[in-house]
Image 1 (tube, rainbow, N blue to C red):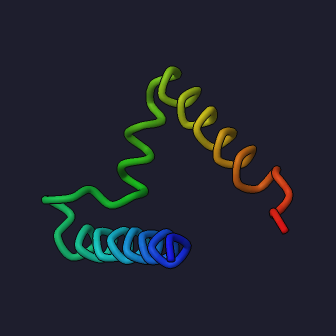
Image 2: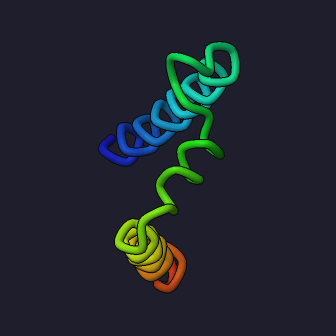
Length: 69
């Protein structure tokens, strides 16, 4: 039962991300498109290091570990 809720939460999160992306394409003055946001974030060296650390953490925890049986 909890696995169903867990999977449903990921589906809802993915749907919200796609809906936000579509809305940012339709109204770029209200929500910045992802490329513009990333370009603005990468100006600072501290932000580049933080983005690298976050991607490293995601890769280590989700892609580096074997799947449980």
